[in-house]
Image (cartoon, rainbow, N blue to C red; front, side):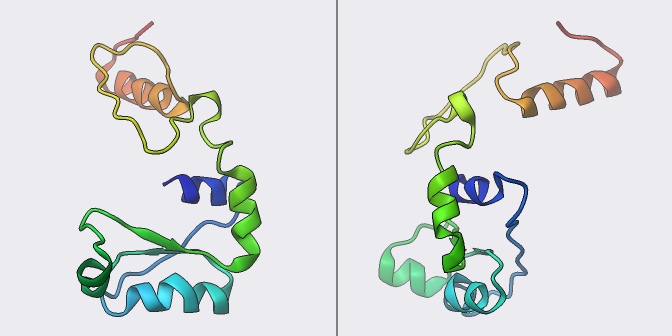
Length: 120
């Protein structure tokens, strides 16, 4: 997630992927980004799970080498002051009224528009 946010921080380098389920880590982790110059979201396969201990909830991203420095430059900018760092800490909001991120405000406004209510 942090790497994808760092890639797209400046409004470009959006990953595109289609999922085949066969040889994805090899193809999309290295070859396709190398050939096309476009980042690829990768779903690790059984080889990754068997040999490297990748868990079934993990994903990866293949990026062309020209974007490595962009990721390094933007990695800690994403989220601004609200960047939770790594490893991500769990946040269990209860009765949350603050607009922690622009996404929170956007979703609250959408919910309010649908339900016809207004929040502070």
